[in-house]
Every structure is written in C-alpha cells, then in structure tokens.
Length: 395
Image (tube, rainbow, N blue to C red; front, side, top):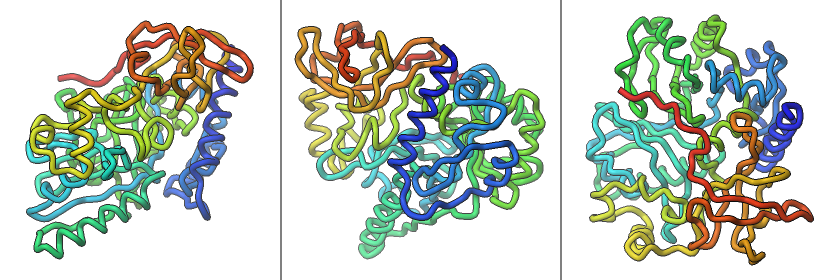
C-alpha cells in the first residue's frame, strides 16, 4: 500500500508540474543544496523545483512533516510590499480582506477578484508597521504583479500615495510540522510559544534580520521565513542540523495541503470560481461585506445575500481507486453533478480523498455520491474539510 501511494503522489505532482511550467526554467538560491541532498527536480511555474529527495520519497516526506518538521523551498512565490499612506485603500480595491482593521503583525488569507466575481488568486497579506507584505502563488506571479502595477498606476495618477515594491532579494522557505517551533527557537534564541498562528514579524535568525510568519500550506504548525538570499543556504543548513528536520519537495506539499482542505490555484479555484462557490466567504471581512469597494463586489455580495452560485466546493472520501482531477461526480441516481478538482490517496488516513465542485444541494455532509474513475463508478461521501485536523498553534 505504501509503495502504491508514493507512486501515486509522485505521478500527480509530475502532471501538475508539466501543466504549470512556462518558458525557460529558473532556479532558486537553494538549488545546489537540493542537488546535494539527491533531489529529483521537475518544472513548476517556470522554475526547477525539488519533487522528492534521495533519503525520502513523497510518502515518507508527508508523514515526516506530520510527525516532525520539514523544509519546503517556496522561493518561487511572489513577494511584494505595498507602501505609502494610501496602501490600505489601494489594496482593498483589489482584495476582499479588511486590511484597515488587521492589527500590526496580523496576517490573513485573502483573494484577488475580478469584475465577474471570480478569484484571480489567493494570497497571504501581513500588516507591517509601515507596509503590507504580500505573498502570492508562483503560478500567478507574473499575472499578479502586472495586476498590482496596472492598478497602482491608476491610483498614482489620481494622486494617491502608494507604491508596489517587488521583493527580489529575499528567498522564502517554509518550515512545517509540530517540531518547527523548537527547531526555529534554537536559531532565533527566543521563546516562540506566544506567537500565534497567522502572525508575522521581523526577527534575527542567526543574527540575520528575516521576516518570520507563523503560517503555512500543510495544515501543521509552522513558519514561512523570508531570508536575504545571500543567507538562505546557511540558514537552511543550520535548520537541517536538527535531526528532526528534513527537506521536502512539492510531491509531499500537494498531499499535505489537500489533507488540510487547502485550495491549489488553477485546480480548486480559478478566475471563474466565486468565493461563495469555493466556500471562501469567510475571507471577506464584515466591513467589506457592508461597504464593498473591491473588484467584483456587486456580483460577490449579491451571491452572498441570495446564497447564489450554482455549485459548491466539497470534500469527498472515495471508495476504490483514487479519483483524479476532471473525474465526473455523479448523484446516487447517476446524474452528472460535478467534477473532481484534486485527488490523492491520503497518507495520514489510508483513504482516497478529493476536492470537487458539485451542484448546490448535493454539498451537505454525509451525502452519498458516486465518482466515475475511468470506466468504473465508485462510491463517495461528502465530508467536512479539513480531512485531517489542523495542527495550527494557538496561544
């Protein structure tokens, strides 16, 4: 069973990598370190990224992250800072978050939206004392940066004091897993137990100023570290001196995020998906629902008020073979009612899980459905996400 799951996870990630790759591949500052650890690489969003390592396959990395701690190189993601006294008004035009009420050091998941109410990308925004720190998906990096620059020009032409700064001198790594705090405390020399999940601050790591965010994409406690690129290798190596910390690749990251019920842009959400359909209405602050003011607000707020949208994102547990993206979802009577968007064998559960969109009305917990996998029709059940309880740190 373990060999089957491992091969399945790697096959899924190879397929995603091929779809996301564009043009000549770039390499992160950690590329040679990955090679030294026997990494097998694949193209992802125009980057050569590690999939698995010589000492651990995707399955082993997944389970190691759930039990110990793993380092994921996410330097391919877009990092930007929004500065100027009108920065909140500017970014609130593009995303659904209530940034004015976000406390200094607080972070939030938000959505870039379009005029049709669709999601252009999901992003993490942290309120810094003098700026907004924004991390966006690698697959949307070019699109997101162009979107930000287009709209900041419009605001500037209207006299607004705001500027978008691309951060290209810092690498980004994610230290994830229940032993992450202890591993990082050894390098920062401070107690991190009072730092809540979804907060961020600048602190010294081995004497190097870095932005440390308690967040991640695995469902576990962890940190995302924005490190001056010249120090990225030495800090990563220092973390790896802890015997409980290992490198992990995109194969494990995909299965971890799916067990955590977290969306992958381009698969589970895209420019045609609205927040209510994706079950992401919670990202829209109370004030924003009342005032609107973000792109597509008329469509999105009307859907919220009237419980609109024809479909809903759900979690499924599937009997039999794993169901992959684009597999058809059927009602118990055999009517086609939706489609799988992501699916993997869940290493933590020993079950096959998936995300799907189904017609509204078929999304209630415990609803019995069917999934067509090749020429077979298999039983499936709607379940509440996350599939695996979150291990986020609470204070």
